[in-house]
Image (cartoon, rainbow, N blue to C red; front, side, top):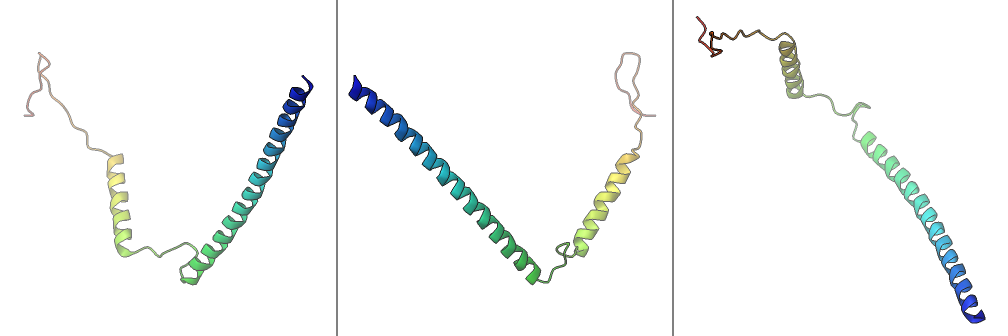
Length: 98
C-alpha cells in the first residue's frame, strides 16, 4: 500500500511540475511574440515612411475621385426616388397606364 501511495504522490507532483513548466514556456513565448510584433510594426512604419507617401497614405487618383462622385450622386438620387403609381381594376388585376 505504501509503495503505491508514494508512486501516486510522485505522479501528482510530476504532473504539477510539468504544468508549471508549460505555463512558464507559454509566458516566455507570449513575451517573444509581443517583442516580434513591436519590431515588425516599427519596421513597417519605417518602410511606409521611406516611400515618401503622406501620413494619410496614397493620394487619391482622378479615377477614384470620379467613382466616388458617381456613387455620391447615385446615393443622392436614391434619397429622392420618383414615385410610381400602379393602376388596378375592380378585380385587382393590374392595368396599363392611360
